[in-house]
Image 1: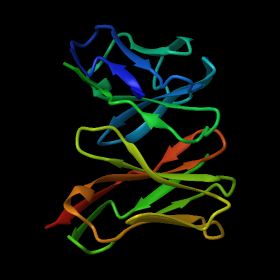
Image 2 (image 1 turned 60 degrees about the vertical axis):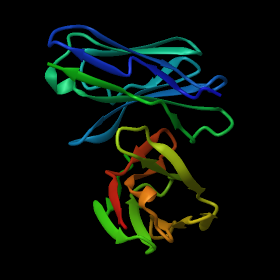
Image 3 (image 1 turned 90 degrees about the horizontal axis):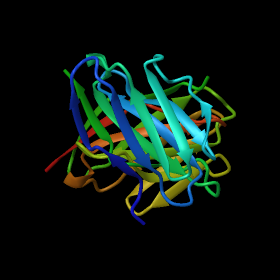
Image 4 (image 1 turned 180 degrees about the horizontal axis):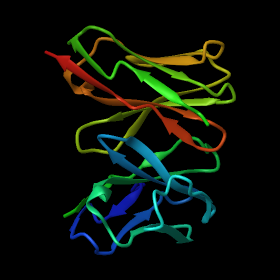
Amino acid sequence: DAGVIQSPRHEVTEMGQEVTLRCKPISGHNSLFWYRQTMMRGLELLIYFNNNVPIDDSGMPEDRFSAKMPNASFSTLKIQPSEPRDSAVYFCASSSAGTPNTQYFGPGTRLTVL
Amino acid sequence: GENVEQHPSTLSVQEGDSAVIKCTYSDSASNYFPWYKQELGKRPQLIIDIRSNVGEKKDQRIAVTLNKTAKHFSLHITETQPEDSAVYFCACFDGNKLVFGAGTILRVKS
């Protein structure tokens, strides 16, 4: 099993640019979670999906952030326009219906907005 | 909503000693309590978890205890080794999502 796959692993962009982060959950998992990690705020849940449907997006910080899950094997997190305070590590995690609480994290995307 | 407090924020131990990290939670309905280990520059990885119908669970040098009445749970690492150095996060499942503690930086000195 390849585990959760995220791309890119590192992203450096300039303020105002659009950023798209990608995630492929573990095959067969039906829940997908997007987290943001910073030193100041720790691990924050941004949004999660069950069976491709967004369930809770209360953690999405602003309208500049959006997430989609067009199918069971792919999700995107988009920031438009990006700002320096968006710099963080963004993790995607997935879990299965059999053990719905057990989440497996991807390697993360380190985003730097200049 | 659920609130998770984790202590201490940093912990230094001598190799071979034990380490204990404690978390308290606020929502008595929480029923699942995982612990994650995150090494520098890497992803959080699940190391052990416990469900509300169990008071203790062990896996080699790692154990977790749960006191539902007091609403706290603890991670115990025995015979610590340098490779145990990492950030450890506790979490609670509040029926909807995982809520994470702020993390504990564990340093094992050799």
